[in-house]
Length: 282
Image 1 (cartoon, helix red, strand yellow):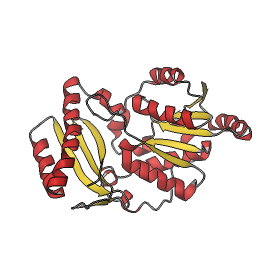
Image 2 (spheres, helix red, strand yellow; image 1 turned 60 degrees about the vertical axis):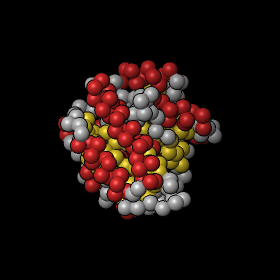
Image 3 (cartoon, one colour; image 1 turned 90 degrees about the vertical axis):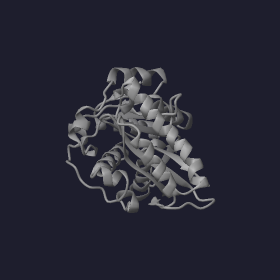
């Protein structure tokens, strides 16, 4: 596995790669890799000649400085994991490299994606995400880029970014990878105690049960059920639970047959904030 810290050196490698006609897959990460990340890398390897993974914890997408400072880091283990699955290239830029021209807002028409749920709860978060992915896409110019569906709102925003600025890049959404208890894999999970992990898994099981409640009753009943569930436990706090229509990422108060929806949830276990979502079709 080749490692690059400077974008110019990486780009020299990429010029030769593209001249040879080889396709490039890209998986951007913030490190502290887990099975979810590994599944993205393996997907890229199966569809491209060369796979590049980046590890960079981007400060501008954290609206909480403590969250940025305490974000889990495990670079040696990350490198070992990537070598183990024969990743081709690891890009390890620092902040001086990524922000040498400063920060700027990238013009992308996001519609509802920039108004509700994570955008509302974490002001400025997606501005930082779009800035850094734009920067990485510009440096690497991959054929395909891979993102997990756990961060569903982010996935849709990156697709909008590609449609606006990088029409030759295909953004591929990949299914959420879960542990045996159903909890979505997340770098933040390692900050949870065993007891807190159990509570986090309860929240996922809640989502599974909600499908039947919505089918038999209503969206309103499902929200009451969710609020009652979180009220039982001091250890977990609901941030939001909403149902969105996938086609336009709008909040809905009712569902109809043959349309695709997503149940979207964010909650805190102790001081750790987690998000999740599940498809819903009546």
